[in-house]
Image (cartoon, rainbow, N blue to C red; front, side, top):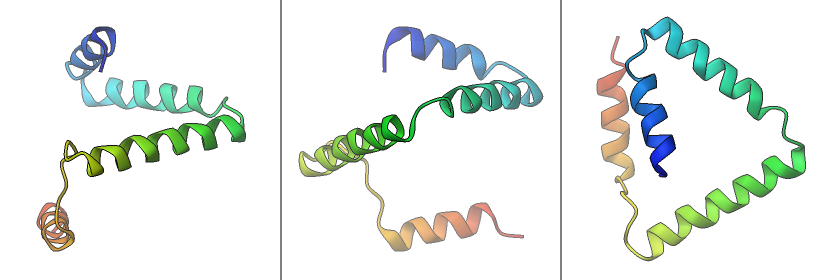
Length: 77
């Protein structure tokens, strides 16, 4: 992650939840201006990056059962 992105995220996390949600919504809206081909290409790049991380051992992976337990614990009614 580049320094400007780190700084933006650091500052965004200081916002109150309502303002953070607004930032997320605006960024999401900006992303939708991409063409379907651009979105597909971006996903292909992301998939390749993640696969490479798994192959070279740099990705943080979680066992499926452990993930299910975490999700259940987090969203337990």
